[in-house]
Image (cartoon, rainbow, N blue to C red; front, side, top):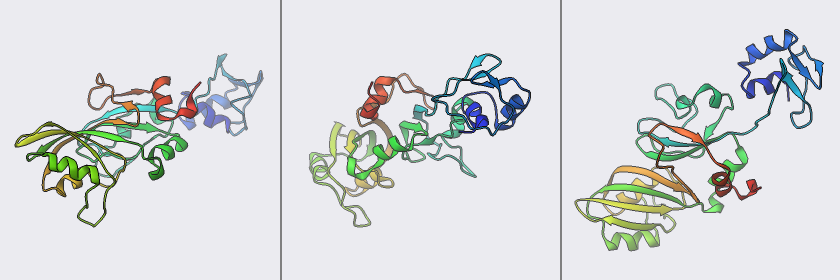
Length: 239
């Protein structure tokens, strides 16, 4: 890894800032002053310090966000605010991205990371990672709907979904439900209810795999995952 990239990734400023630091002769690699910003260093082996402060390398970042409505799940957009825009500079320097997507008007659990491997594990159709949503539905949700979802429903484009687990919390003119699915088709929850002639009027993701949304996180807020939470997402992180 380039020295300037290592410093930039670990909070010592922008790439331009750290180049200036290096050229001032205040950065040392294994005890020797290094003035070449492009010098190669191995963060697992080499000891790098700035004015005596040891550089502790962090390669990946794992964040849980309570996504607010009106914000899109993307790294950048010309017109709308993105979930990455909500992060502070310390988090943005890792160049993270959302794991999958929540619709613009959907709230709730969103994982943001720069770890491509864990993202693949979570999004791979072969893994059948369950995702649970809470929703308010315009229409009376019935036991017949529950049975239909358990068998999978056919969407308007002919796609037949995998079975979903529908839990009816309130059955009324505005019903309240929880739905667990293992797929992530575009607008899938909304389209599944459209298939039974009902409309989703509010949608929030509660969990992904074994990871549940932290109830104390306000809309638009985020925090780093704990080690226990990270292990729930990816057992390879255990220990």
